[in-house]
Amino acid sequence: MVRSIDPAAKAERGFVPPRNDEERFLMRHVEDLARAAQTRSIPRYSGFLSDREQDLARAALGRAGMQEGWCFDGGYPDAERRVLCIEPEYCDADSPVCCVQLCCRAQAGAALPAHKDYLGSLMGLELRREALGDIVLPEDQPGTAYVFALEHAAQLICQELCAAGRTQLTTRLLEPGEIPDFPAVQREMRTATVSSLRLDAVLAAMLHCSRGVAVELITAGRVEINHLPADKPHAPVYEGDVFTVRGKGRFGLTALPGKSKKDRLIIEYFQY
Image (cartoon, rainbow, N blue to C red; front, side, top):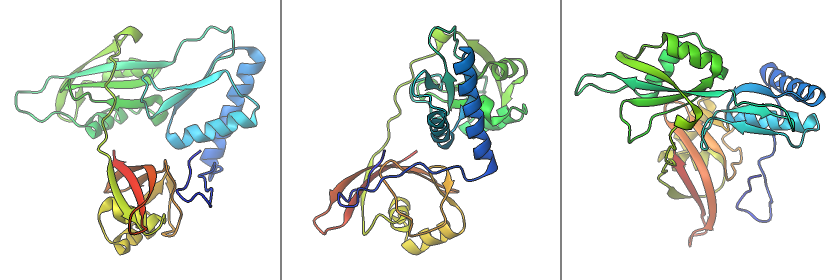
Protein backbone atom coordinates (compact mmCIF):
# COMPACT_ATOMS: atom_id res chain seq x y z
CA MET A 1 0.00 0.00 0.00
CA VAL A 2 1.13 3.55 -0.59
CA ARG A 3 1.53 6.12 2.14
CA SER A 4 1.41 9.81 2.81
CA ILE A 5 4.47 11.74 3.96
CA ASP A 6 2.59 12.83 7.07
CA PRO A 7 3.40 10.14 9.69
CA ALA A 8 0.50 11.26 11.88
CA ALA A 9 -2.09 10.81 9.18
CA LYS A 10 -1.04 7.27 8.19
CA ALA A 11 -2.98 7.87 4.99
CA GLU A 12 -3.06 5.18 2.32
CA ARG A 13 -4.53 4.93 -1.15
CA GLY A 14 -6.99 2.14 -0.49
CA PHE A 15 -8.82 -0.01 -3.00
CA VAL A 16 -11.36 1.97 -4.99
CA PRO A 17 -14.46 -0.22 -5.52
CA PRO A 18 -15.90 -0.68 -9.02
CA ARG A 19 -17.46 2.52 -10.29
CA ASN A 20 -19.49 1.33 -13.25
CA ASP A 21 -21.06 -1.74 -14.84
CA GLU A 22 -17.96 -2.46 -16.90
CA GLU A 23 -15.77 -2.69 -13.80
CA ARG A 24 -18.35 -4.77 -11.94
CA PHE A 25 -18.54 -7.15 -14.91
CA LEU A 26 -14.74 -7.51 -14.88
CA MET A 27 -14.74 -8.47 -11.20
CA ARG A 28 -17.52 -11.03 -11.72
CA HIS A 29 -15.61 -12.44 -14.69
CA VAL A 30 -12.46 -12.85 -12.60
CA GLU A 31 -14.45 -14.58 -9.87
CA ASP A 32 -15.89 -16.97 -12.49
CA LEU A 33 -12.37 -17.70 -13.77
CA ALA A 34 -11.19 -18.40 -10.22
CA ARG A 35 -14.08 -20.76 -9.50
CA ALA A 36 -13.55 -22.66 -12.76
CA ALA A 37 -9.83 -23.01 -12.08
CA GLN A 38 -10.39 -24.19 -8.50
CA THR A 39 -13.23 -26.65 -9.11
CA ARG A 40 -11.91 -28.14 -12.35
CA SER A 41 -8.13 -27.77 -11.74
CA ILE A 42 -7.61 -26.16 -15.14
CA PRO A 43 -5.76 -22.93 -15.98
CA ARG A 44 -7.80 -19.85 -16.74
CA TYR A 45 -6.66 -16.52 -18.21
CA SER A 46 -8.05 -13.02 -18.61
CA GLY A 47 -7.31 -10.58 -21.40
CA PHE A 48 -4.67 -7.88 -20.95
CA LEU A 49 -5.52 -5.63 -18.01
CA SER A 50 -4.55 -2.06 -17.23
CA ASP A 51 -3.15 -1.05 -13.83
CA ARG A 52 -6.64 -0.20 -12.59
CA GLU A 53 -8.09 -3.47 -13.91
CA GLN A 54 -5.31 -5.43 -12.22
CA ASP A 55 -6.32 -3.84 -8.91
CA LEU A 56 -9.93 -4.88 -9.52
CA ALA A 57 -8.79 -8.41 -10.40
CA ARG A 58 -6.81 -8.69 -7.15
CA ALA A 59 -9.88 -7.63 -5.19
CA ALA A 60 -12.05 -10.14 -7.05
CA LEU A 61 -9.58 -12.95 -6.34
CA GLY A 62 -9.63 -12.02 -2.67
CA ARG A 63 -13.41 -12.04 -2.70
CA ALA A 64 -13.27 -15.52 -4.27
CA GLY A 65 -10.94 -16.68 -1.50
CA MET A 66 -8.02 -17.35 -3.85
CA GLN A 67 -4.79 -16.34 -2.14
CA GLU A 68 -2.30 -18.22 -4.33
CA GLY A 69 -2.02 -20.03 -7.66
CA TRP A 70 -2.23 -16.88 -9.76
CA CYS A 71 0.04 -14.22 -11.20
CA PHE A 72 0.12 -11.42 -13.79
CA ASP A 73 2.13 -11.86 -16.99
CA GLY A 74 2.76 -9.21 -19.62
CA GLY A 75 5.43 -11.07 -21.59
CA TYR A 76 8.41 -9.27 -20.03
CA PRO A 77 9.30 -8.10 -16.50
CA ASP A 78 8.41 -4.39 -16.77
CA ALA A 79 5.13 -4.81 -18.65
CA GLU A 80 2.34 -2.37 -17.76
CA ARG A 81 -0.55 -4.23 -19.36
CA ARG A 82 -0.68 -7.80 -18.06
CA VAL A 83 -2.78 -10.95 -18.26
CA LEU A 84 -4.17 -12.57 -15.13
CA CYS A 85 -2.99 -16.20 -15.12
CA ILE A 86 -4.83 -18.53 -12.72
CA GLU A 87 -2.92 -21.80 -12.75
CA PRO A 88 -3.82 -24.38 -10.08
CA GLU A 89 -1.07 -26.65 -8.81
CA TYR A 90 -0.23 -29.67 -11.00
CA CYS A 91 -2.17 -28.41 -14.04
CA ASP A 92 -0.60 -28.11 -17.48
CA ALA A 93 -0.24 -24.42 -18.26
CA ASP A 94 1.26 -22.44 -21.14
CA SER A 95 1.36 -18.66 -21.07
CA PRO A 96 -1.22 -17.14 -23.45
CA VAL A 97 1.07 -14.15 -24.12
CA CYS A 98 2.80 -14.07 -27.51
CA CYS A 99 5.30 -11.60 -28.94
CA VAL A 100 5.35 -10.35 -32.54
CA GLN A 101 8.41 -8.57 -33.91
CA LEU A 102 7.67 -5.73 -36.34
CA CYS A 103 10.50 -4.58 -38.62
CA CYS A 104 10.03 -1.39 -40.63
CA ARG A 105 11.18 -0.97 -44.21
CA ALA A 106 11.48 2.79 -44.20
CA GLN A 107 13.51 4.71 -46.75
CA ALA A 108 16.73 6.31 -45.61
CA GLY A 109 16.00 9.53 -43.75
CA ALA A 110 12.26 8.85 -43.44
CA ALA A 111 10.62 9.23 -40.05
CA LEU A 112 10.05 5.95 -38.27
CA PRO A 113 6.63 5.10 -36.80
CA ALA A 114 5.95 6.15 -33.22
CA HIS A 115 4.05 4.21 -30.58
CA LYS A 116 0.75 5.84 -31.61
CA ASP A 117 1.31 4.78 -35.24
CA TYR A 118 1.76 1.14 -34.27
CA LEU A 119 -1.24 1.21 -31.95
CA GLY A 120 -3.42 2.87 -34.59
CA SER A 121 -2.50 0.24 -37.17
CA LEU A 122 -3.17 -2.58 -34.73
CA MET A 123 -6.56 -1.18 -33.77
CA GLY A 124 -7.28 -0.90 -37.50
CA LEU A 125 -7.29 -4.70 -37.56
CA GLU A 126 -10.40 -4.46 -35.34
CA LEU A 127 -8.65 -6.14 -32.44
CA ARG A 128 -10.15 -5.62 -29.02
CA ARG A 129 -7.88 -3.68 -26.66
CA GLU A 130 -7.80 -6.54 -24.15
CA ALA A 131 -6.15 -8.72 -26.81
CA LEU A 132 -3.15 -6.37 -26.94
CA GLY A 133 -0.47 -5.79 -24.33
CA ASP A 134 2.49 -3.44 -24.43
CA ILE A 135 4.18 -2.16 -27.57
CA VAL A 136 7.93 -1.91 -26.91
CA LEU A 137 10.22 0.24 -29.08
CA PRO A 138 13.81 -0.44 -27.92
CA GLU A 139 16.06 2.60 -28.33
CA ASP A 140 18.92 0.39 -29.51
CA GLN A 141 16.79 -1.10 -32.32
CA PRO A 142 15.41 1.80 -34.38
CA GLY A 143 12.72 0.66 -36.77
CA THR A 144 11.87 -2.42 -34.72
CA ALA A 145 8.92 -2.84 -32.39
CA TYR A 146 7.69 -5.72 -30.27
CA VAL A 147 3.97 -6.25 -29.75
CA PHE A 148 2.70 -8.48 -26.95
CA ALA A 149 -0.68 -10.02 -27.69
CA LEU A 150 -2.92 -12.99 -27.03
CA GLU A 151 -2.32 -15.89 -29.38
CA HIS A 152 -5.27 -15.28 -31.72
CA ALA A 153 -4.37 -11.60 -31.99
CA ALA A 154 -0.71 -12.42 -32.64
CA GLN A 155 -1.70 -14.73 -35.48
CA LEU A 156 -3.92 -12.05 -37.01
CA ILE A 157 -1.14 -9.46 -36.75
CA CYS A 158 1.25 -11.78 -38.60
CA GLN A 159 -1.32 -12.43 -41.31
CA GLU A 160 -2.76 -8.94 -41.85
CA LEU A 161 -0.47 -6.17 -40.59
CA CYS A 162 1.73 -4.76 -43.32
CA ALA A 163 2.23 -1.10 -42.37
CA ALA A 164 2.40 1.28 -39.44
CA GLY A 165 1.33 4.74 -40.48
CA ARG A 166 2.82 5.11 -43.95
CA THR A 167 5.74 2.78 -43.34
CA GLN A 168 5.79 -0.76 -44.67
CA LEU A 169 6.81 -3.48 -42.24
CA THR A 170 7.31 -7.21 -41.87
CA THR A 171 6.12 -9.35 -38.97
CA ARG A 172 7.46 -12.44 -37.23
CA LEU A 173 6.01 -14.43 -34.34
CA LEU A 174 8.81 -15.02 -31.85
CA GLU A 175 9.43 -18.15 -29.83
CA PRO A 176 9.55 -17.49 -26.06
CA GLY A 177 13.34 -17.87 -26.03
CA GLU A 178 13.71 -15.24 -28.77
CA ILE A 179 12.14 -12.37 -26.84
CA PRO A 180 14.93 -9.88 -26.01
CA ASP A 181 15.83 -8.81 -22.52
CA PHE A 182 14.66 -5.23 -22.78
CA PRO A 183 16.76 -2.79 -20.75
CA ALA A 184 14.99 -1.23 -17.81
CA VAL A 185 13.44 2.11 -18.68
CA GLN A 186 15.55 4.95 -17.34
CA ARG A 187 13.35 7.67 -15.89
CA GLU A 188 14.53 11.20 -15.27
CA MET A 189 13.64 11.79 -11.65
CA ARG A 190 12.64 15.33 -10.74
CA THR A 191 11.93 17.02 -7.44
CA ALA A 192 9.73 19.94 -6.47
CA THR A 193 8.26 21.46 -3.34
CA VAL A 194 4.57 21.97 -2.69
CA SER A 195 2.57 23.63 0.04
CA SER A 196 0.29 20.59 0.48
CA LEU A 197 -0.44 17.17 -0.97
CA ARG A 198 -3.55 18.42 -2.74
CA LEU A 199 -4.06 17.42 -6.35
CA ASP A 200 -3.99 20.99 -7.68
CA ALA A 201 -0.74 21.81 -5.84
CA VAL A 202 1.07 18.65 -6.94
CA LEU A 203 -0.21 18.92 -10.51
CA ALA A 204 0.92 22.54 -10.76
CA ALA A 205 4.42 21.52 -9.63
CA MET A 206 4.63 18.67 -12.15
CA LEU A 207 3.33 20.75 -15.05
CA HIS A 208 5.24 23.92 -14.07
CA CYS A 209 2.03 25.94 -14.19
CA SER A 210 -0.05 27.95 -11.73
CA ARG A 211 -2.52 26.28 -9.41
CA GLY A 212 -5.26 28.14 -11.24
CA VAL A 213 -4.34 26.42 -14.50
CA ALA A 214 -4.14 23.09 -12.68
CA VAL A 215 -7.64 23.63 -11.27
CA GLU A 216 -8.96 24.37 -14.78
CA LEU A 217 -7.49 21.10 -16.08
CA ILE A 218 -9.02 19.15 -13.21
CA THR A 219 -12.50 20.70 -13.43
CA ALA A 220 -12.47 20.25 -17.22
CA GLY A 221 -12.21 16.49 -16.70
CA ARG A 222 -8.74 16.19 -18.20
CA VAL A 223 -7.06 14.59 -15.19
CA GLU A 224 -7.03 10.99 -13.96
CA ILE A 225 -5.39 9.47 -10.90
CA ASN A 226 -4.55 5.79 -11.30
CA HIS A 227 -6.81 5.64 -14.38
CA LEU A 228 -9.81 7.06 -12.50
CA PRO A 229 -11.33 10.48 -13.22
CA ALA A 230 -10.31 13.17 -10.74
CA ASP A 231 -12.58 16.21 -10.58
CA LYS A 232 -11.79 17.66 -7.14
CA PRO A 233 -8.80 20.04 -6.95
CA HIS A 234 -8.51 19.41 -3.21
CA ALA A 235 -8.31 15.61 -3.56
CA PRO A 236 -5.35 14.18 -1.58
CA VAL A 237 -2.52 12.48 -3.45
CA TYR A 238 -0.25 9.69 -2.29
CA GLU A 239 3.13 8.18 -2.99
CA GLY A 240 2.83 5.76 -5.91
CA ASP A 241 -0.02 7.61 -7.65
CA VAL A 242 0.00 7.90 -11.43
CA PHE A 243 -1.44 11.09 -12.96
CA THR A 244 -2.70 11.22 -16.53
CA VAL A 245 -3.34 14.72 -17.90
CA ARG A 246 -4.95 14.67 -21.32
CA GLY A 247 -2.82 16.67 -23.73
CA LYS A 248 0.04 17.02 -21.22
CA GLY A 249 1.30 13.51 -20.49
CA ARG A 250 1.51 11.00 -17.67
CA PHE A 251 3.42 11.39 -14.40
CA GLY A 252 4.37 9.08 -11.56
CA LEU A 253 4.75 10.28 -7.98
CA THR A 254 7.56 8.04 -6.76
CA ALA A 255 8.47 9.38 -3.33
CA LEU A 256 7.70 11.94 -0.65
CA PRO A 257 11.15 12.42 0.91
CA GLY A 258 10.21 14.92 3.60
CA LYS A 259 10.21 18.70 4.03
CA SER A 260 12.42 21.50 2.80
CA LYS A 261 14.14 24.07 5.00
CA LYS A 262 11.17 26.32 4.34
CA ASP A 263 8.82 23.65 5.70
CA ARG A 264 7.38 22.82 2.28
CA LEU A 265 6.71 19.23 1.27
CA ILE A 266 9.17 17.66 -1.16
CA ILE A 267 7.87 15.45 -3.97
CA GLU A 268 9.86 13.20 -6.28
CA TYR A 269 8.29 12.35 -9.65
CA PHE A 270 8.96 11.48 -13.28
CA GLN A 271 7.20 11.84 -16.61
CA TYR A 272 6.52 8.73 -18.64
